Image (tube, rainbow, N blue to C red; front, side, top):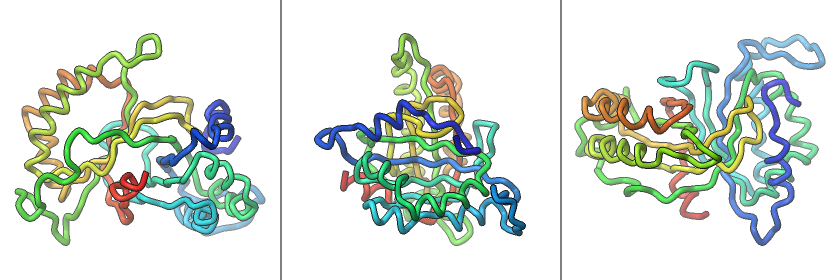
Length: 270
């Protein structure tokens, strides 16, 4: 087991044994929390921070070799819900197949680079996901026409929601509450320029802390100010307490600034 999380062996077996005819793209959503100072297993002296060690790990070569691509990469700005751990980055890698994800783990160049991840990562959750149909258009209002458009000081701001719904006998039991919340929240968010980059269902958590998840959602606003206008809207707050809190058993709500965001085009290719 790596030091930064637990491997779900059942999901690993699913990834490794999916028949080619049933295989296809999978999105690996990575939540990352770093050590303050990198700690290498061989005891070497280093001045690297955990973040810098993870930068040294970034396996762009192995990813390209198996046909995978980083389609979202961001730094965390705000963590509104979910106290621990405090996440530092969120990234999404699209693999052409589940088999490609397993093939990358077996590559020698990937394994050699992995020592940097082990040195720098305090905790991580990696969730295998499939795209969901969008409940509304990806871009409904031109950002030039919204009350709080993007600026040099306050640009595009993405809210990432990692969600586990309440369950009973293995089935989610509160879809009506979530739909009621989404109706109210959407009525406020759309005029403020929200764009749904992607909503995903979680098919498994390959590494994490033992928790399971149902969905991951990426909603981008023209600015942080636009998001806060929505977040503080009285109708949305009422719907949140009446419906969203009833629907959701566990969640992270994290505000990020993305320096790579290809989620929309990657979903069109899926």
